[in-house]
Length: 289
Length: 291
Image 1 (spheres, rainbow over the protein chains, first blue to last red):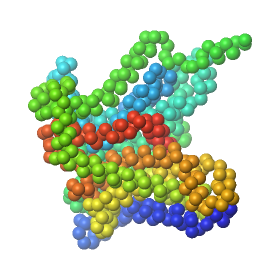
Image 2 (image 1 turned 90 degrees about the horizontal axis):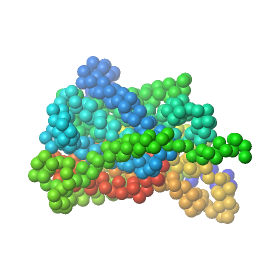
Image 3 (image 1 turned 45 degrees about the vertical axis):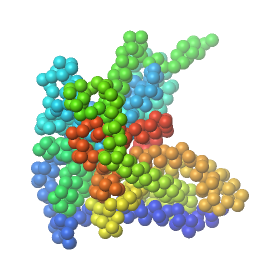
Image 4 (image 1 turned 180 degrees about the vertical axis):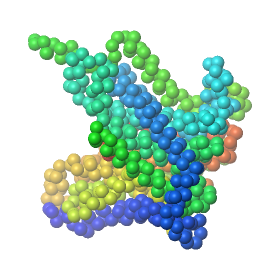
């Protein structure tokens, strides 16, 4: 019996192909990226080793700092706008409202659509001349609000955030809904008998009990904001005047447009570190509370 | 009947909100949100059937005067959407099959077989879930270039499979853990080898996990852009996401054709979702719970 389940040959057949592929394509390239980030290299020939110079330059480069600021704004907007909306929707749907399944299904549809499609669709919605948004504003008598939403410095970033909000609100709603549904009915029953109102029950019982799933949502939305690429790349390409640029699009442009392989790698290492630090931070925050 | 029993019977189900007015208000709110979530897609479907003069005449929101299906045929033939579509199908299908084969075998070996490094291997693979794909972009580009794999299906399939493995191993592994030992013991006593036990006894038991992984892999491969745009610039191998970008460049002012292309990209996913919506929602939750 044991010999069958600890046969080295079988284990090798089951594990080695995966392990080789995983190490070669995922694990090793990350270390290679960290190494590239220490080089001054344009992709031709061998790079020169310059130590941490790329990182020093990065934290002085206003374009990098601006992209980090934008991704922080994205993260902030996700946490303080998207998650509360998702939470409210989840709590309503989880409270045995009519049409629960239907709404859950409908709200979730945008999650499944390719970000490229969503970016194209929203660029049409925002179009200055024929876009849905401006036409809508004209029809409700707010024609003076109509403008080129993506083309102007002061509206571009907010306008690029809305499609992400729209796309992922259903996802966080679904996670929180699952969390809310797993709260034991007995606890809610007890709260009701004690005379707690709906809102009170949600605030003092549901939300604390949903903490594990809220943590997952928080991690996902913050990391998602740091990683955002497709949407910005297709929607604005970082423009106008870098007002919507984020670290990932800047990394892409640095590597493939200006061929600064080392500097671009330093930005990509920054993105990994940013994501890891945030995950650890959120995890520890939720533990100590 | 005691008072406790009466109270319990009175409220068999939690009420949704107090009073009929509250109910109406709540439904109105939920419907409004549903419209916001769905209307942009309906609008896309509508303008995909219009011509320029109709779109740019100012009536962008109305129904098309006549349904211009020729936008779809133009997008498919002149816009190469059919090629992109077939490429996406091929790359996605191959990735799903490979992810399933590799991760089910590995997940099984890690959770059900006895060897010293199983815990370490699991930790190593799970690390992959925390890594953003951006980090590997440039090294992968250089590896694929050196292997002369750029501009081939493999340049997408290999990374998609590698990056799909961590979550797949996690999900399948946690399902394998739940299978009682007796299943394997009796199979082995009855004379099954390990391969036979795995393929004909164990795998059929975890079909829900397999479909979860398949759905997950489908969505991430079908919608992926960063690798697809970097590793492929030959139209013959482009997938839908990249192809859509070049198509938009070509038909920049012809919204109808672009809309048709976007619809062709979107409809398969939405149809699959509507057919399997319970399973899809479960998969998305399962993918998140891993933390």
